[in-house]
Figure 1: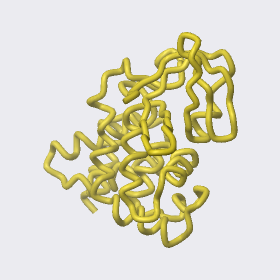
Figure 2: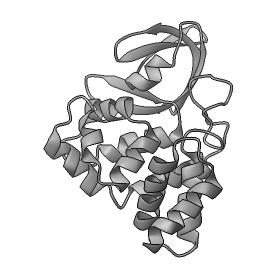
Figure 3: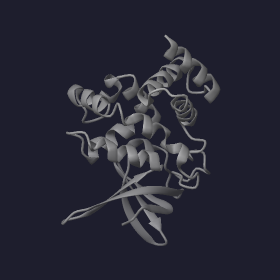
Length: 211
């Protein structure tokens, strides 16, 4: 099985890219979000999920282990296949998705292609207990497992949602239920904005929990 590809972006399509690895071109399905951040000739590292079927082998590429974990978890929801899961991840970042689920904000999930109201509500309901663990998963993944060849800016150690992940972990360590901690930090992040650091999120999260 192929677990990771590192090479040069040779072509970018509507829902896939071609990654040239030492002269061999691999066709990789990816989210619209990931594809928008790619450029022809750019060095890229993608975490791969390999699907093997009788008639085909398909590669799905992600900018981080966390994104791949969300891709797999989304497909545990009835009615969500690989195409819909990619659509969700192309519409919402992993942190935005985690926040939407924590807040019960199915309307945000509904914006993804192929997702109607009922499916969005099902995703939010069924993944409510799993979202906190996925939100903090990036804290335990080595920074060398990185995405889109951007010099490490999206590495889990410093990437999008890292402050929220640390804050959720801190509240959980204080004894709060993971789902409660996730909801409190999602509310804090919504009020304070994307630039809020871990300490500010924890303080606001504790205020939310004290209400």
